[in-house]
Structure formats: C-alpha cells, structure tokens
Image 1 (tube, rainbow, N blue to C red):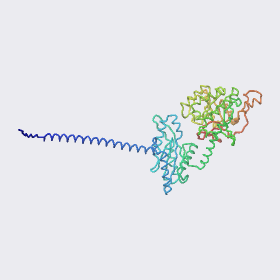
Image 2 (image 1 turned 135 degrees about the horizontal axis):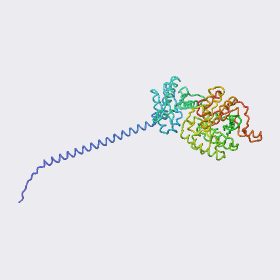
Image 3 (image 1 turned 90 degrees about the horizontal axis):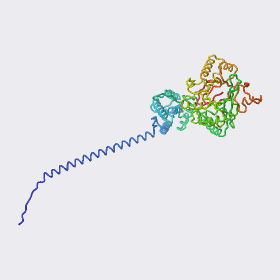
Image 4 (image 1 turned 45 degrees about the vertical axis):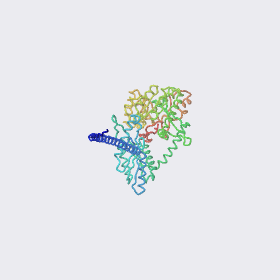
Length: 530
C-alpha cells in the first residue's frame, strides 16, 4: 500500500539571505568597477594632460630659445615675414637690430660655460624688459641676439632703442661670486629703406653690427652700403692671405735697437711684411686684423717666430731678436712647445730671444698666461711688455708676470724734452722698472733731443727712425758695417739720417697709434707702427 507524504519547506528566509548577499556582492562589484573606472579615468586624464604639456613643450621649443626664453631664429624669421606682409599691405615700417656681446668668449674661457650661460640668460631678460608691446626679441645663436622693432617712423626711433640696449648691456652681469662686464654692440637696418626682403634686411643689420664691432665695439651703427663692397674685398683678401701663408709670400724686416748712447747695437725687432704678387709690399695694418679674426694669425705667427729664430742664429752672439706675439698666439696651448721647437731647430740660444706682449693681452685668462710666461721665462726666453703706459698700466702686472723689459710707447717719446710732465712720468717708469730689475726700451726716437733726454733719464735701450729704419735681413746694420769696416765690430754704428715714414708698422696686435699725434685709437686687432 503506497502512501503520499507532502512536505512543505519554507525557503523565504533563505531567499532573502541570498538576495541580500547578491545585492551586497553587486554593490561591491559596482563600487569596485566604479573605482577602477575612476582610477582608469584619472590615469587617462593625467596621460592626456602629460601629452598636452609635452605638446606645449615641443611647440615652445620649436619657437623659443631654452636658455634665454626669447624667440629662436626660426620663429623670428616667421615674425619678420609676417611684419613684411603687413608692411606691404599698408602697415607700419619696422627695423631689425642685431645685438652681439663684446668679448663674450673671454667670459667662457675665464669663468666656464656655466657663467657664460648665465650671462646669456640675463641678457635675454634685459632685452625683454626694453621692448614695447608688439616688438619681439630673439636669440639667434651663441651670443647673437636680434630685436624686431615695429612702428618705426624715423631712424631716430631705431637709434633711441639701440642706445637703450647699449646702456643696459653696459651694466655688470652679476654671477654670484663676481661681476663681469661684456657690453654690447648693435647694428640696425630699416625695412623699406635698406631692404625690401626679410633675408636681405637681416643680412644688412648683421653687416651694420660688424661695422660697430670693427670701429670700437659698444657702439651702434646703421647699415652702410659701402659695407657690401668692403665685405666682398675682405673675402677676396682672406683667400689671398691663405694662399700667401701656404706659399710663404712674407718677409721679415728688422729695426735695430741700440743702447742709450745711440751707437751700441743691442739687437733687432722683427717686423712682418707681405710681398703681395700684384699689390707689392703690404704693411701689417693691411692684413694682421684680418688674420686675427680668421684665425690665420696662428700659422702666420709661427712662421714669424721660426723665421726670426733661424735668421738671428747667424748673427753675432751679442745680438738678440725681439718677436711680437699676438693675443691669439698667447692663448695657444702649444705656444711654449712651439718656441722650444723654434729654438731647437734654429740653434738660437734662448736668452737671445725676446717675446713682446701688450698689456691688453693680460686682461683675461691670467692664470693660463701666468703659467705660459713662467714656463717661457724658465727656458731662458726674455719677456717684454710693449706699449707700457698707454693701456691700463696696472702695477700688478709688473710683479705678477715675469717681465725682463718694459717698452715705453712712442706717445711718451714724442713729447719728451718738450713737456716736463712727460719727462717726470718717463723718469718714474724707468726708476720703477730698474727697482724691479727690468730694463727699459724707448720707441720712436726721431730727434737728438729725445735721445739726449732719455739718456739723461738712464733709459737702457732706444729705437726709432732716427737711429735705423726697418730693413730686410740681408741689409742689417751689423752686416753693412762689417762689410764697410772689414771687421765684425758692432759697437760703433752711426745713426741713419732718414725721414720718418708713417707707412712702417710692427708685427703686433693691440692698439693703433694715430700717425700724427701718437694717441691710442680703440681697436681689437690692428698693428702698431714702430
């Protein structure tokens, strides 16, 4: 017999528990998903922002110079083109001012590139503070800057801004532990007046800047049409100078140096001449500045040094030879080795070689220069300070550097025996030099009164056109006198009766003398008359 049993199980409570559990799990899942979504969204947002910042950085770098914060060359050129289009549509005229820091390389060499970068950064800040709304400033590269000046109505507008630039860059740059001065030169050209295209405008502003640096630095110049012709001639001359060095188209002339009696020959100063194949004999003021700027002064200076040593080696042992060093040569790391090589190859005794430098060369890299001159002095080579009294004449130079001789500049010689104040100054220089165990040479002797005055002041050496003009090596005083007298004596030389020629210049880079007055004229790389 079968029976059916009906059982009823109440699942309500269990279902409720399961429902609650499901809701909890679902809620948790929702929260987790929401958190993941927020995190993912946040990451995505940050990534988008980072990409946006990177894009902005790329765009900034594409248009700006990182160091100075100014526009770069590319964006500046674009701005020039836009200004030109505006001008052609009836807009205002504009100008470009090219700015260059004077002697910036000296800051890098002496203080390091970090200091140089800080100078560039501060320069950018100063230029930015000068320009008006609508004007633009850019760093074109190195220490070259440019300003686009809009709304130019007259050249006076440009001159006013240029003068402000010169004044603000004349202020010392604060580098923390010390302050340095660079100053600045400015050249400008006006669109529509000097050029009708932006490329030509920028080029002519650069030519104007070159003119400023050529005629004294720290000044402002407008574009001058003559510069184009001069630059073309300069380019041709550079090529000819390179060829002249390769083909040795140069010749050394020598000016005699005497004891203060004016008759006892002590030695000669080597002076450089270029025997140009078509222009004839060229004086150093025609090519030394170019050689300095192009770097050709290095091989040219080596040729002078080696040739002078080789020729002087055949002279009597009593005679010395003086060779002028350029500023570029003095900064060369291998100068000492090159001098040693010239002496070794020629057989010339070191004490018979005298190297002349000017005060202006001692203004920078003093540590390196001190070491270089010290090593040369230790070799037995004599060191002379040329043009003493015309530059800074810092007394510190006299004890800091191993000088054996001071050369009094012709500016003093011309007025000696005429102006009692000059006599007093020269007497003081001679006394000071003697107390420091240095000899004294006076340049530019042209009258007997000058010679007598210097002799009475106990000057050690003299040279000048009255005593002897520069001549080629085969016409030297001691050789001519030996032929005439049939003897090797060199102690009874008669002074030459010659007229002063303003065309002869010594191989030295530093300051140019005005032929009439003998006063210093500012210049970075020109030759000096002796």
